[in-house]
Image 1 (tube, rainbow, N blue to C red):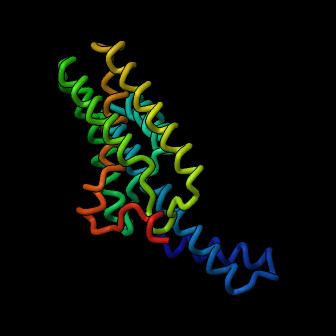
Image 2 (cartoon, one colour):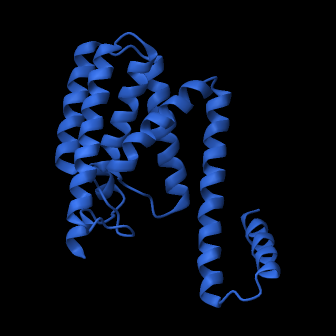
Image 3 (tube, helix red, strand yellow):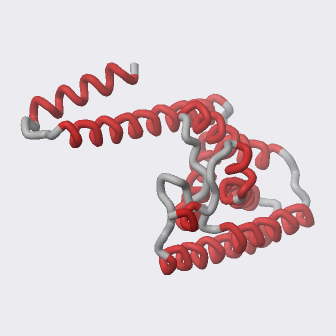
Length: 197
């Protein structure tokens, strides 16, 4: 199905853009493949959330997670199947778990403290494909990510006993996992790539 989509789309574009170089075709093909993988991955995860009766909560958790992900960056799987599995576990599984179990305020506070410390030490976490080499941008992202982690933590405590508290905490923990060196070690990906450029 992926090949059919790529071939059909590439043929359509090639028929309308006669002056595409071979390099442009390769870039376009790579971009289309990434788009296809992201759309199908998200569609599958949305379907699972729908089947679990968890769609509204999942959408909220996904938005909260992406707000943290933008400045914090973090681990990206190099293989699409690994990406699908880790995405399903982290961006669907953790919020689902946290909305179906009761977490005491003490545990929430401990998890928030661990997350804030991890953000201070690890954010932003780059990838080998996108190393964050600009020191000013790295600092700006660190300040933004840490500020958001603190805001999320305060909101987790303020809204304790409410579903939004658990969704905020799940987004915070998901990004904490993705910026920590643990994910990079598990999947044998290089960490702190900006130092290697």
